[in-house]
Length: 439
Image 1 (cartoon, helix red, strand yellow):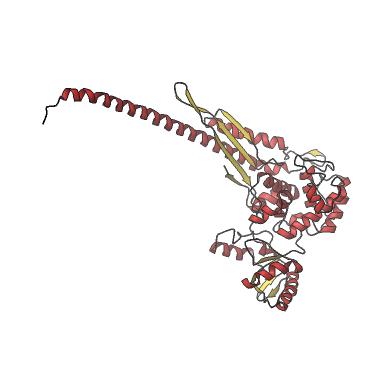
Image 2 (cartoon, one colour):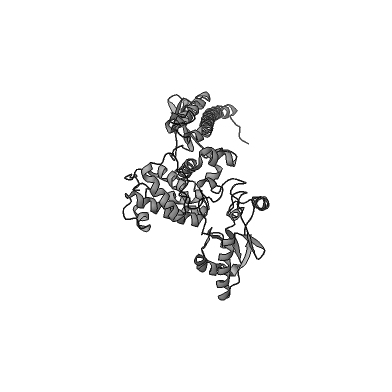
């Protein structure tokens, strides 16, 4: 073996060791900077989350005050809160909370607008020093909402809206008497065509629905307790599967509609649905044009609202609340999206409803009532009909709910608040307003 120069080897190894040490040190610095960045971002996200939740909590506590009457007996109502005050309160609470959690540069907005916005978004801006002259942005955003369960779940709260009138029984299943007569006619027509209809389910109480949901807790297939249209006595689950095609082609002749695209067996009776459906009895009942309208209705429009309510069997109070939200009763209102008139019809929808002049307030109100009647028949619930008026029927049909669009959610919640009073319609009757982070 040839002799080795150990001193030379050691001299060659020293630079390699030094380079390795430098690399380790640089890696440690980088890892430390990354860890610092992650830690700061986590702190900023926590500040944004807490600020959004605090702002939403302030909104929840003040929500019903926005819908309280501004005056009582000609005197200012101390319980009333203007929209600007409501928003300012939530913004102040959110900013204070963010500062207390180390944030210094924040922005607070309210997606979806609305008379009383349901969502609050908090953005915390910051930058992190990684080293000499090296900084990186460390922004965090959080969005929270208050969720009226009755409005956004679409169908009311547990224990509300259950049908309590007389029932008829077909094939051992209970249903409303008018539904039973319509089913008899439909079943006879089906039998003539060689199809024997089977009633698998009819009226179900809230308690029965609770037992079903406990056994199958999937809200797309089994509605939550208090949220099923079966409690109205208007809904039938029909079979056998071989009858689905016949039902799809013929049920409409007997005033039945397939409620959900994913349930070919579920048909609802559309006549006499009215606006007292599904926990919103305060809406005034079917065709209640005589009930005293809200105090915010200008006297000049009250006769047109009452007339349309009687003609189309839609509560005048619902129409009035909707008009307040749509245009503030301005017959010549125009929206940036192109909606026109007191009821804010898009040109295509106006044509479809036979409304030649959307700026003719009386005719527009009549067309509004006509459209709401149709939507109530289609969806069977006030919140869903309102959502379809705002966002169109398609997204409501796809989910069987108020779609998760901030504008539509705010629209539905505002009208329900105006309709019955926020405390009655959205909070007290359904266990309060929920708060959750959504982003």
